Image (cartoon, rainbow, N blue to C red):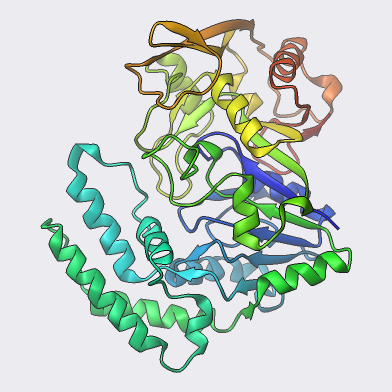
Length: 423
C-alpha cells in the first residue's frame, strides 16, 4: 500500500489543515512529518474554528489514527494546550493520537535561545516565530537533542539539565537583554511532560511498515510551505526542516517508492509572513484588500500576512521539486470583485527574462513579468458545484493548468470544510 502526501507549495498558510480535514474520511492514518508548533493549521466546521499546531488535522474524525512523526519537534507546553482545547469535543486522544519516540522535544531554553538569536540579528532578523524550532533542529543535527523516547528513561532529567545549562551559556554569549524566569518555565514544562506521558509513544516507522503491509491508507501531512524548505526555500528566510516531499521520507521513515499521490496546495494569490523576498508583493489597495477579505493573519503568530499576485515561476518550481500529481487551489473567493487579475509568468532577472526560479530573488535582482486575466465579480462562497463557477474563474484555472501541467482537482471557496468544490 502506498502513502499519499499533502503539502504547501508557497510560503505556508495555504490551507493545508482544511484540506487534510476534508480528505481524512478517505484515510486510516494521518501523519505529520516535519515542523513543530510554528505551524498553524486552521479547520472550520459546525460554526467552530479550530487551530492546530502540532496535532495532525485528522484528529476530529472518529475513524482515523493521527501520528506525530519522528521529523516533528514537540513543545510539550503548547501540545498540552492543544489537548486542553480538544477536551470539550470528547475526542479520545489517548486512543487516536500516537507520538513517535524519535520526535525531538523543544525545551524552554530552546525558545529563549531563539529569542536571543533573533534579537542579536537586529534588522537582519529572519522573522522567526520564536517557538524554539531552529535551536531544537540545531541540537538534533548536532546530536545533542532530547527525544520523546528519552523521557521514558530514568536519567533523562540529568540529560535535560546538562543541555539547559549549555543553552543558558549560549544565551549569555549573545549579550542581549532577554529577561526570563527559567524555574517558572520549567514548572510548566515538566507538568506538560507528565501530560505527554499519558499518550501512546510508538516506534513510528515500524508502525507505518505494518500499516502498509495491512493495506491501511496513509496521508502524510506537511507543515509550512515548499518555499520555506531549509534546502530549496528562500534561504536564509526559511524554516529549519525539509517541507518538501523528501521531508516525508525522512520525517516518517517512508521509502520514496512508497509515495503515490502528491497533493500540492496553493492560494489563488500569494502570501508571506515574516521577513524575506517576495517578488509579487503588493503595497497598494489591491494588496490591502486581499489581506482584509482573506483575513490574512498568521494562525500561530497573529502577524499580518504580506499579500501579492500569484507567482507562477515560484509555483512551477515547487511543483517540480515535489513531483506534484494533483493541485488544490485555495481562497478563490478572495479574488472575487477584482476587474483584472495578474499572474507572474516570468522574472526580469539581471537584465534577462527567465522562467526558472533563480538562486536569489532579492527585489533588487528580480522584477515580476505579469500576464493579465479577466476577473469575476460573483460571490463564490455559496457555490457547491464546479458547474456554478463563473467562466472567468474557469479561464483562470485553465490558464494555470496549462502553465503548470498538473490538474487542479479542488477549488476552495471559503474556510468551512463544506466550501470545497471537487472538479
